[in-house]
Every structure is written in C-alpha cells, then in structure tokens.
Length: 335
Image 1 (cartoon, one colour):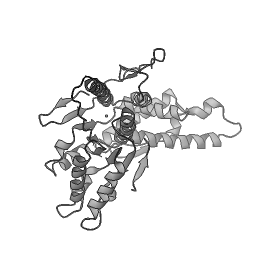
Image 2 (tube, one colour):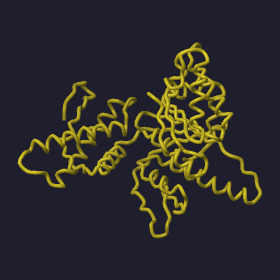
Image 3 (cartoon, one colour):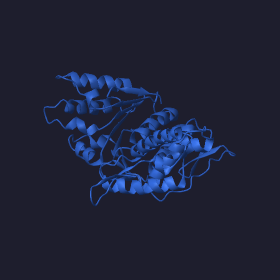
Image 4 (cartoon, helix red, strand yellow):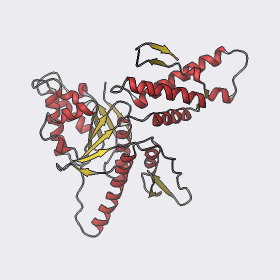
C-alpha cells in the first residue's frame, strides 16, 4: 500500500506502569440524545459541551458513531484537561504538554482507522496538533531493502507526519522477521522519533489484540511510550444492525423490517462461525453494497414501469443473498 495523506478514542485506570488502559465496553444500545440546538450546546455520550468550541462538528460526528462509548469519554476528558490547562496557565501554574501516542487493538472493522482519522482533525482544532493531517502506513512503507534504508524511510515519514497523525496499521508485522529483519530498525527509528518530537505528532500503532500485545514485548521501552491503549472489541449484533441501518440511510436506502430480521439472523451465525476473523462493520458494509446491486438488478428486471421513490429506497429480504455456513454441518446455503 502506498502512503496516503488526508485532511483532517473510558474509564481511565493505571496498570501501575504508567500506562492508561482504555477498555471500550459495549452496553445495551441507548436512545441517541438530541443535540441541544436551542441553547448552543452539543453532547458527547450524554455529556454537555459548549456549542461555541471550534471542534464542535467533530464532536457531533464522534457522538453519532455507533458504540465507542469510552472513546467518547476519553475525548471528553482531553477536552476538560485542555480547558483546565488554560486555567492553570492563566493562574501562573505549570502546564506541561501531554503525550498522546496511542495503541489501538482489535479486529478488523471495529473503527480503529476511522477514530484515528477523527483524532487528527480533533487535535488540530483543539490546538494539540498544528496541522491534523493523517498519514496511514504499513510495513512496506517503513521497511527498506538494505541496511540503513529503513531508518531513512521511517524518518522521512515521521517528518511528513509532524503536526499530524502517523497511523501504522498491522504494526506487529514490523517484528515478524526475526533479529536480522529490517523491521526492527523501523521500530527503533519510531521510538527515537517519539522522543525527539514527543509533542509535535501523534503516533498510533494498530492491529489485532493478541499480535499487538506480543509486538509490545519485542522492545522493552515500547510499552511505556504509549500512555493511551485502546481496546476495540467486536460489535454486538444489535450494534451491527444499527450500523447497517445508518449506512443505508446515508445512501437514501431503507431496510424493511423483514430485511432487518433476516440480516440479524445471518449476523448471529456469521459472528459465531468466524469468531476470531469476523470483520464487523466492514462485513456489514460489504453485504449492504451487494444488496444495493441486487436491488438494482431486481428493479430493472421487473419490467414495465419506472419504480417509485419508495421502491427505489426499499431493500427487501431477497436483495440480501447471504451465504450462511451452517455451524453444525459446514454446508453452505444461499439465503
């Protein structure tokens, strides 16, 4: 993958080693809280924020995301801390800059990249980062082909990320080649950059939970350099349904009640079958896009008249042609 640049995560407890442990719980879905347009206030996970803050739009976007309640609480705490830091400075008290390097751990489709992009925009508007741009890289973008080349490539990417967020996806792959692999050189270069530019950019390392925990053991000083560690658990079936309906509404489509029932039953089976590899919201998006194509074929083939608005919007059960691998027999059927 080539480097991509785009404009532009809780209950907090210490594990005794100085790291903030962030564990995202997924409580029963709550009714979304309406935005307080009349008094200029906005809400984040039920907490009020003044509407005049420069990052109000990003807060609204975060609040509308399904789940991620504790990521929202973390952002609120950063908002509160920045305000108090300003008060302390005005009172003549010390107010040191904080380090926001993060670890994102979880399965695919749980919101890691989306949240990382939002963090860049948010931190820029909060004044934490000067630019807020987002650079996403993987192993191939960091690791060179000969001795010394990796450090050069990594330092160059860090320089490009100054003022913004450097997001390393599948970061554990940097440690998979053994002692002679150049991935270790990339890790060392990142660690040095975190010290040299500690408050000038945010480094986010992301990947599967188990692999990321093993990766952190490869360098004794690595864990202590990431004060914020975020777990992104799999979405529940009910949350996945809400995500599907949200995605459909964004495209001016609507899931009929019987469609929701069919999709719910399928998601229960799919999650059970692919417990450790289920791709969550990404899976839902792929199924929705297939259903939209199937709906288009159905409407064209039904013939005689031009479909009305409600027909153009409705996604029926037959539009979701879902392959379900039966857990008991292993047979594949098309629903």
